[in-house]
Image: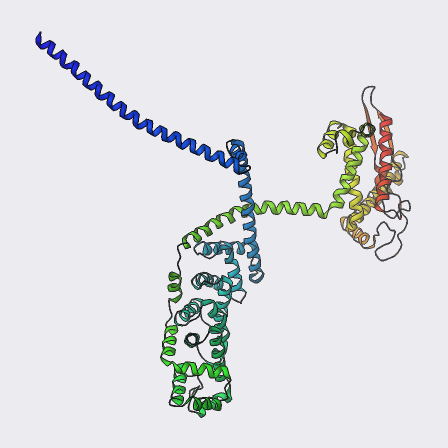
Length: 612
């Protein structure tokens, strides 16, 4: 029993201790979470006060924040953003196509070939940091110099890299490279290697070398000096003179070497420009001989000796500068002669932290151009449709005019009622095209459809007949053929009803079907001699009187029962004898002719309504 009580007491003590521990832990957690909650509440209140202050101080912020909470506003904003992006992408694609079109003026490629070139240009642009939109400009500059497409493509990527390494624009770089290539006969990679080695060994920027050195190369090559030798001399000069002065001095030297009198004068002082075979000696050898002849002389003696050569001031300055530092001249020429890899080295040295970002941006532009290119054909089709409408407003206007006449006839009562009550002017404003279409559809019935079709037909035919000589000639010849056939058939029917078998036999034997070649010939003759509504042929001769195109318009009622009636409108008389040479319409202008046809047409419809 004692043991049981002891155990029970132990359990009670354990429970009390465990409860106390749990209470202590709970209190600590509550203190921690309470403090965190207080800080969160304070942060929330602080932000609320901040946004309230912004809303009070900045107009429109409150409304903007409220709009952002509206999902429809967000959807609308997303749609507008997508639309603006599509517009931007389409513009980029169009600009790219404009650049290609400029290239194709020189290249003369088919559309398929041009699409292939576009793909290659995008690939090259995507792996370089030069702005993508400058790629077609650089390619156009290269190909415009007379290079073929493949050679131009080979020169494009080195040009983009050279522009980056030389911190120059792409077009200037391309122009310099092409100029040096054409004048030196070297490949594009060799040219760029020499140019960048000149930058490294001289004291001039790439854009200055690209501007001045191409002017010297042709003169130097004419004497017989190679590209790398000339570039080395220029690099040596730039260590003492400015880029422009170095160009002037070196050009003066090359011109003196190409003048036979100056060459003879040099030979007179012991300096040979050419060897015994007539080939130019190396520039180092020439300058070394000149240095020996000038060594030990005073400044005055040196100037007098240069004066005997008959050199201009620029040539004297260049020769004096070069022979004063022969080691530098030898070092510069050796460097340019062995300049392989100078472009790649310069490109690597010119890397910047943003180069990767620029390349990524070019890749994004390529995708945008691809999206825009898919939209361009749709816009092109729309543009062609709009252009067609603008160019054919007179024809379309004629057809719409005919439809308007037909609608007016079918809705004469409605228009009268609207005019009296002022519905169009006061209550409904301006009648829209949609309302017109609804009214026509609502009043559609067999007669209404016939009237509508005839109205559109007359409007279109009048304008086409007035505008196109060939159409007018075709209509006239076709009607003549119809009349001829009708005459023959009418004669046969007459012989049948009068039992004139002899005449019927003769008529059948003489019956002549229209020959297409003859019809085409008659249309051609009619086109060449047809006149317009002024009554004068194209050759200036007066037009013979014809028959009015709308001489008589009649309507006859045919009853087929007490409940159903059908009306036949005979428009044969509208077409019969339709000729612009008719005396009844001779001298009418377009507006008078349309009014006259409208009046005749309305008579037909009134007759039809009376017959109903």
